[in-house]
Amino acid sequence: MWVNHQLEGGAETYNITPAFRLTGPLDHAALTAAIGDVVNRHEILRTTYVTDANDEPHQRIHPAGEALVPVPVVDVAPEDLTAAVDEVIAHHFDLAAELPLRVSLFRCSPEEHFLVLVIHHIATDGVSGAPLARDLTAAYAARLDGQAPEWEPLAVQYKDYALWQRELLGDVTDPDSLAARQAAYWRAELDGVPQPLTLPLDRPRPAERSRHGGKVDIVVAPQVAARLQALADERGMTMAMVMQAALAVLLRKLGAEEDVTIGNPIAGRTDEALADLIGFFVNTQVLRTNLSGDPSFDDLLAQVRDKTLAAYERQDVPFELLVELINPERSASYLPLFQVVFAWQNFAKQELEFRGLEAEFEQHIASTSMFDLFFSVALDEAGAVRGDLVYATQLFDRDTAEAIAAQYTRVLEQVAVDPSLAVSGVDVLGVEERERLVGEANDTAHAVEWVSLPEAFEAQVARTPE
Image (cartoon, rainbow, N blue to C red; front, side):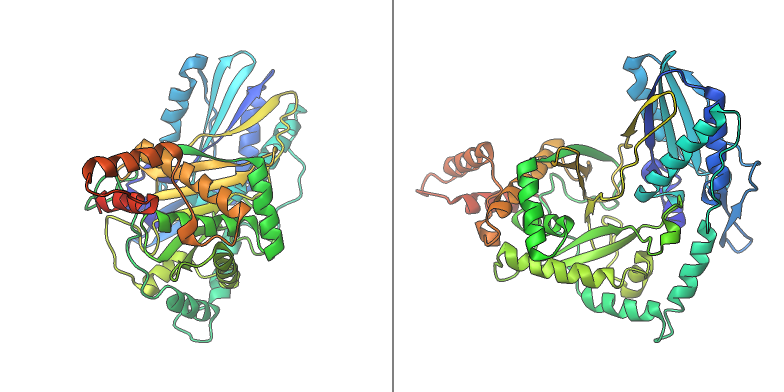
């Protein structure tokens, strides 16, 4: 992450931005003190990264009580709030000179505030949201009573995890080490991965990819989600596995090869002692799916289940090390090994209890995209699957991204009803797309009496620039 930060020039690509809408009489002094308590509790939030004379990076953990994070109050009209939040979440961190946490408090009225935390990804991940919210609300309650929070000391800090991981993995050049054994599996599994994945791009890939991104919604109705969960239960697998298999089908229908790779974030917290820590533990795995021979969705489910379980057993070796060892073809225009990511957000949702306040968690996302396509979904309280498709705007128009999100939903609807359906039998076209494509085919080929829908769709993919 430190290397990526240097390559990005400190850009906001790796900013994590939890936000809280707070209604009621907010005590600013108590909130400021509570932020300080959380920073003191979690060393990773008071760590900077400096280089020595040989340009080697080192962490510097600042002493508790000396690492101060101000909480400025900014008055803003409700209609100007979104723009104000967008400005602060686009902050460019200098990891050598400033803490990886910034806090802003927007006051829309005397009893309506919006608290925004901007945390660099080097110091946090998605699972960190629960301990962050829990510790912040506990500290705020204590500070309202004029005292410091009385919580049990953390069993370990992030530096302890870093040392433990290094000891656990061992030297990858030692054939008996865990790192070498796991790396051998991944070398064999990812050998010859086709690069890059063929997608229905609106524009040719540039020589160097940018990080500009957009976001569209993904919504899967509760009844469909229930059928998908039942399907997962019947096959002895997770909902995430089912949805990832469906994504592989979609990518194939969109023009990808029969050999499809999808990136998967994995929590990386393999020890209970890490559950209460804020920090960057997430690792990335690559799931490779073989869609040759027109398999049924049931066949794909079995394949995805087996490969996912095998990957779980070999999750310790960092993805960055794998890239170095596998050494795939490199290009500045796309990421190595995968360009599409699927994330099932199953980490615990933390109830917010800022004492004396009504609190609502919100996630504001900067207009960036690290990947060509990033599917991020979770079950909501009503049983629906909801999430986002974040897309690279230098490759896709918004209309295309919206179409892809809708097509993903259609795939899920069909395989939920009939998991014996073959990949070739899945129809990703909506009524309007079907009519448009058939109309285009008829307009450009009057001599052809009939064009099948799959042929019409493949013609559209063929016209898409590589």
